[in-house]
Image (cartoon, rainbow, N blue to C red; front, side, top):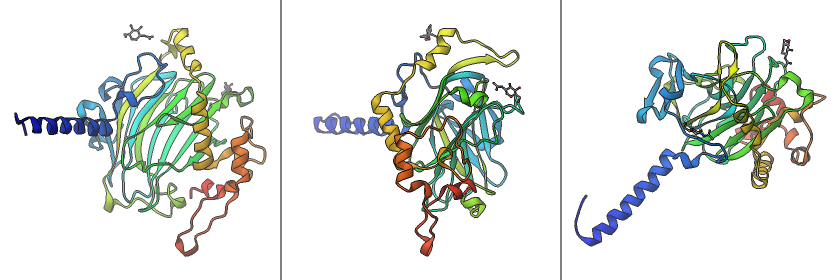
Amino acid sequence: MASSSSSSTTSSCFFFFLVLLLGSALFLPNVAIALPELPNLTTLSFEEGYTQLFGDSNLMLHREGRSVHLSLDQRTGAGFASQDLYLHGFFSASIKLPSDYAAGVVVAFYMSNGDVFEKTHDELDFEFLGNIRGREWRIQTNVYGNGSTSVGREERYGLWFDPTEDYHQYSILWSSEKIIFYIDNVPIREMVRTQAMGGDFPSKPMSLYATIWDGSTWATSGGRYKVNYKYAPYVAEFADLVLHGCTVDPSDHETTCRRSDAELYNTITMSEDQRAAMEKFRKKHMTYSYCHDRARYPTPPPECTIGPEAENYLASGEAKFSYHRRRGRHYRRSPVDVIFGI
Ligand SMILES: *[C@@H]1O[C@H](CO)[C@@H](O)[C@H](O)[C@H]1NC(C)=O
Ligand SMILES: *[C@@H]1O[C@H](CO)[C@@H](O)[C@H](O)[C@H]1NC(C)=O
C-alpha cells in the first residue's frame, strides 16, 4: 500500500478520504446527533449506562461496547435497559434492523416504569414490526400514562428509507410539557401536555429499554405471518447510545437534576423547518393515528386537535382507504386493519 511516488500519494490521499467518508457513513459519528442546544450531549458505551435484561449470549457488544447487537433465535430474544431511572430527558439510539424475511419480529426502543409501578405505569415507545420479504418494516409510536393502557395512543408510519440497510437515529424527547419523537433529526410526532389529559401524560421516572422478541401472534398481518427460524438469527444493531436526562434515585424518586436542568428539556422547541418537515412526514408516511380512528374513538381523546395536517389526511381519503388484496399485490392498511394488527 505505502509508496513514495507522488502519484500514489495522491491516490492514497484519495483512499484515506474514501475511508473517512465510508467510516462516517458506517459509524454515524456524534455529529449526527440532533439538538445542539443540549449541553454535554455525548454517546455512552454499554458499560457506562446500560445493563443486560435477558437473552444471555444473544446480546453481543462490539466496538468496545459502543455498539450492541441483540439477536432473536429459536432459544430467546434479548434486551437491555438503562442502569438509571430518569425523569425527563433526551434518549436516542442509532438502530439497524434485521434484513430480509423478518415477519413476526418485533424490535422495541422505549421508556417504561412497568416494573416499578405495576398498575399505574408510564410508557413511551418506538416499536418496529418486521415483515415478509419484499415488504417494508413498519414503525409505531405509543404513549401511555399512569396505567392508561385502555387508551391506546398509537400512530403507525412507513419510512422514507430502508431501515435494514443502515443505521438511523431514533430519539425521544420527554419534558414535563411535551414529548417529541424524532427519526434522523426529523420530528415525527409531538404530544403537548394538556390539562385534559390528566395522568395520561407520562410523569413518573422511567428506564430506557431496547429489546428484540417474537411477536408472531400479532406483529405481521395480525399473526398470519410468523417468525420463521429458518432465517434466524435476526440481529438488531444499536449504536450512538444517548441518555441525557435527570437521573432519579429509585428508592425515593428524588431527582438529582437541578431545577435549571429539569427546565432544560422544556426549552427545546421545533424550528419552523423542523415543524414543516414533521408535517410533511405525517402527511406522506403516517398510515394510522388513534386521533383519526372514529371506529375506535367516536369522540377522540382530548389532546387530539384536528389541525391542518390531520384535515389533509382525512380529506385525502388516507384515513378510510379500503383494504385491497387484488392479485395479492395492491395492499393498503386501513385503520381498522391496523387495530387488529395487520
Ligand atoms: C458539562 O459537563 C461538565 C463536566 O462533567 C460539567 O462541569 C459542566 O457543568 C456541564 N455543563 C452543563 C451545562 O451541564
Ligand atoms: C394515577 O392513578 C392512580 C390510581 O388510579 C391515582 O390515584 C392517581 O391520582 C393518578 N395520578 C394522576 C397524576 O392522575
